[in-house]
Amino acid sequence: MDLDYESSSSYFNRLLEIGIALTAEKDYNKLLEMILTEARNITNADGGTLYICENNQLRYKIMQNTSLNVFKGGAGEEIDIPPVEMVHSNVSAYTALTRQTVNIPDVYNSKLFDFSGPKKFDQAVGYSTRSMLVTPLINREDKVIGVLQLINSVSSSNKVVPFDENLESVVKSLASQAGMAIANMQYVEEIKQFFDSFVKVMATAIDERTPYNASHSRNIAILSEKFAVYLDSVKEGKYENTHFDATRIKQLVTAAWLHDVGKLAVPISVLDKPTRLSDGYECLMLRLELIESKIRANYLEACLNYPEKREGLTQLWKDNLQYIHEVKEVVTRVNSPATFVDDDILRKLTEIKNKSFEGVEEPLLTDKEFEHLSIRKGTLTFEERVIVESHVSVAERILSKMEFPDYLKNVPYWAIRHHEFLDGSGYCKKCKDDELPIEVRILTILDIFDALTAKDRPYKAGMPVEKAIQILGFMVKEGKLDGDLLEAFSLSKCWDGVVS
Image (cartoon, rainbow, N blue to C red; front, top):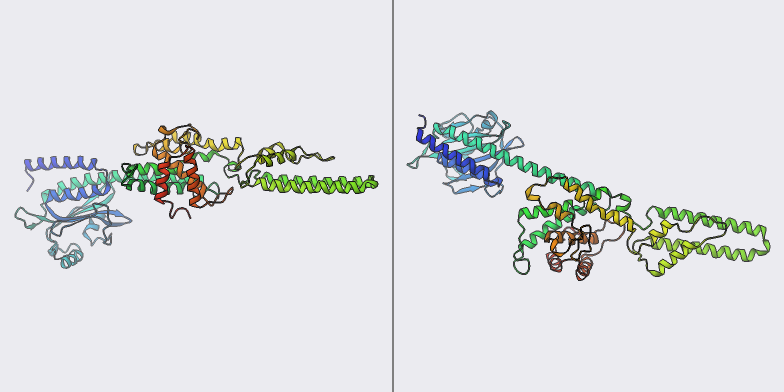
């Protein structure tokens, strides 16, 4: 018997309401739960299961049974039941394989499928599985993505009865809406996962340009997530009302992955310059060897031409060789980034640069070598530092070409400001206090912290966490970093497991 007009209209309106609700739901697990719940409500089913097709199996996602008070999967928890193999003898698998809806009036009087599983379940828990309605969930690409299985339709007199054949079309319609809703959400998740993987690929490409700095972006991403979770858990003090929900954390972590994307444009010779002279050190040493050889040749020639001056020439030769030896020692020591170039060293370098030997055209130090060795701290010249700092403006140009979704809208702003300081002395926007949100302040602290503690840098040894925190503290006193945030970071110890 067909549904009357009033009933049909009622179900039609209910399906419209369900369709709207399914479209509005943004949580995947809640969506699946809603689909099964609404299907049970329409058919007055005591229980049911929603399966999703994964790896050519049907995996349990949602289970409900009112009589047994069982409601699983709605919070995303795993259902500890082995997946259903795709065999025709299983009713749910059959539905997925054939795309047909199956209505079983009485499981115990049916030989169509192997119902040993439900019967064992009944015996174990004292339940009685009788009627069953099973329908496939099909997406817009006409692919079966899941199965909806309803168990035990209950009549108005509270008796288990077969599922009304007239409701099959209603359930099929609901299953069709459900298939579309699930597929849409899966597409969104796939796009998000693709974007995430693309972000990580870019960050990996940056870090893998060199054996040094290979874990920097990953470390900042891990540290930022752990620190944000810690700040969200703070119950008193300045950050008791600072909350980081999943979306806010996602934005922060994505900004962490992308904060150094501009380094793709920085030459490796500058990005990983291990010493002041870098490759030029060997060339300088070879030239000093050449100068030493020429001094020796000139000495021998002078001894042949002026044997009466041999004693004085020998002393001059020894003095010159000693000077060359001292130059090699000075250059080797100053070439190391561990050496701070003070005024005394600078005067010595100036003397060496101006020193010349009779009969030798080659300079002890070229203008370029003198410039590099005169770097007070670190290994980069002013021009090289400008090149490195340009990675921020490059990052801004790169990120401006990317269409960030609303839930990641702040990522570019945060990512390109991780070198800004509260006093405006950072780069490249020269932002100050009020222009730097907490996320930027976090990234700045973490970026410096990882640089200080990293053990994979060619130009310095990694320092202990305590020493790094102390240096960050000095920067707080200079007005560059957020002192409250640094204190919270120190208390969080979120570097455990990240910094060895």
